[in-house]
Image (cartoon, rainbow, N blue to C red):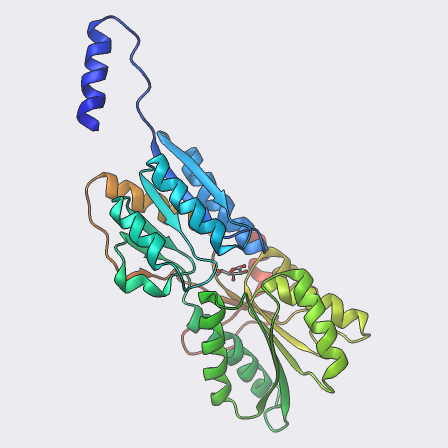
Length: 330
Ligand code: GYE
């Protein structure tokens, strides 16, 4: 292909014609949808980086939370003959066939965010995303350590876990981490566990119904900040004080969660960065330069932010949200 372009270019120049523009590198991205602030920041980071890069063309598809749309998009990318495919799966199963087609077409596949279960059976050039099990562990460990620090570990503390989209690796991983950490804090009692689909609206609705059906809720573990923010609205509407009557731990660390923590309505958020642009850029640049990437899944380094800071979670110590809110970019 490169040879052909060179021949055409030389021929065009010999004939005194203006050289045609060099073919762009087409970078295709199959995104899940737009369910949360995290997702918006993630799309902006990746798309913005590709669009700003000279010689790169973005081919973007928003699947609106539907696996069948993602499958169609991937097949479309193959037909269009794109040069790279960035992929995150709305759920973790059911990708074997279409990803095998991507492999057959020999299009380098870069896995981001939610990884497919068939990761060991497909060819991919690099993988980047959050450590969801650790994030889930940190959520519950934060609640456990915080309650210990205020002397509430001698009472029975009722906990509800609001989960993300069922079957998404971000949901299965965080749930695994949540439940494993519950074992470490026997005073935490699980009294509710339901999906809020990673959206603010469903977070509000699920919290509303829990407040009606569960006598006492002390702690809400919401697997993303959007659901926590929706739940805060439901808690206020029920005449309770979020952040005090109910301890609220979110995940992602979006700006709105920082604002809620600073306002005293939310207690902590576990960071999961959506800023993948720089990774995607350096990955494609390396591949273009003929370098090989490691197959190991790369997890970004992430923090924990809360009202006062100083909660030690073993792998990380929390930072006071108010001290760093101005530096946050998403
Ligand atoms: O936490 C949530 C989003 O897959 C890590 O998806 C992502 C999650 C993120 O909708 O807010």
